[in-house]
Image (cartoon, rainbow, N blue to C red; front, side):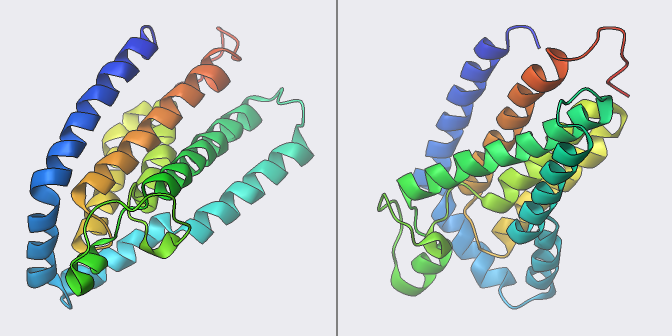
Length: 213
């Protein structure tokens, strides 16, 4: 975790550049192509099913139970397992709060508004959550959760990250989001988990503990 601030800045700049390239040049043709070729197909239906693994109500219920369990079992966060659970819950919660903030701020039209009304771009400061596209909520929830698990159990990193990527891709397949929305969501999820890991796990753990398995 050395040089995390510098790495975060570099990662942010790269992500922003890629986001802008996608936004101005690729998002529209990609989603129009996906909608034309995969709408009302089994690919769309499968994408909807896979997306449920990061469905917002399920995740929020899980977070609620997680925080309650921590509060009841170990309010002082002295045990290893409660610290680990707190890290996971905070990683996802922080990502959700940041994501909701950007959704309200940018209020980007979802692809359906392009298909039906030829609306594309940002209209800023909107609470019409169903129409706000960026960042992808499913993707940021998936990446924050699965990045957190990757940091804890690194031998399963390929599996965890593959699932997160699959969920992100499905959000494009079902035309709920543009590719740049998915990129933005992944960025928020990863950054939230990595920074929370630094402060909840690395700075509070006993050096003799084998936190990483």
